[in-house]
Image (cartoon, rainbow, N blue to C red):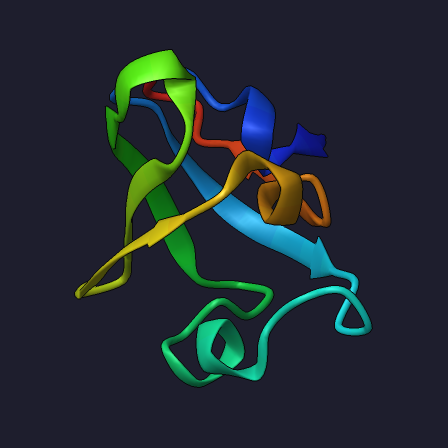
Length: 77
């Protein structure tokens, strides 16, 4: 298990835990919850923000926020 900001480009993972005190409510509403699948689709210049797919939602988040989301990579990646 490691923080989301360390996910490799194209890698898929399952969200294991989140620190809700540090996450914007909008992320939680868009499905950033434990048990959901997440994948890194694209990194902007300078590697920030990260463009992600969480279940069927696409969103961009800053690496600073991604540090508070713990993920476990899927075995097939």
